[in-house]
Length: 317
Image (cartoon, rainbow, N blue to C red):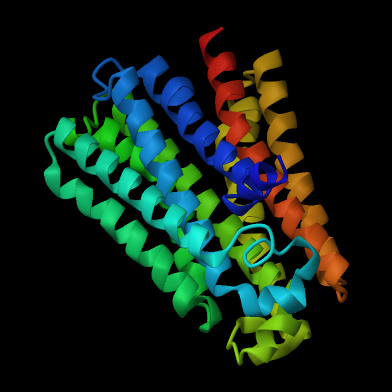
């Protein structure tokens, strides 16, 4: 039983559930309700989700394999490789998951008649290995890589389910595609912020392996200011959406409804969480502070994604 629990921790099962739910929400609460010419059948879409999950899980495994040294300093109590699971077994699972993910990815690429789309899965596998091997300790490159791969998991739903048929600008397709791009950008910036915060949290161990993270190169004070600036990007981005899509609509057209009120309140909740993150980061100094902020980023991401089924429900009812 302990080995099973350790295995689920190794592959970050909770995170995998979030990835799967995100793709399911994009597909069944955004694409399917508004479009008639989507490409993927239910079974094909599930294969895409499984391919994503297997490759993501393999990324977590290889990351822990290469992180044994730093985890002895940063997370000795929660370290898995070398304690609950041997390095050899972890490598076996890493290879198996990559083969399964790549095989399913190649299948789904051929299913949408775009075989070169399989290169995306090869890229993800290589990128996750390269990140764990050397990019993680590099200056910002690893942070950008993880953020891009997180955003790609969202964009891939549109890539496989919409783009092969082309995006028609005269109907709902282009609007849905733009919405997916917005959520993709949101996932990128929140993940980027979280990755930098995690580097601040792990500074002690990273210094022992001569890492060149933003926190180590510029120190806590300057890194904190950079994060505050980055948080302002989604804050002002959401404010821009609030004004153009909601507030101006109310004052100019006097179009008020309970749906508008719920939408405003929910978006305000995301803004409120971002402001809490901004205030918290502005005075964070301890490892526990950084852990709280990192966890808050994950909450913001989940709340942001859950806006899709809410807004779809309000639109259709």
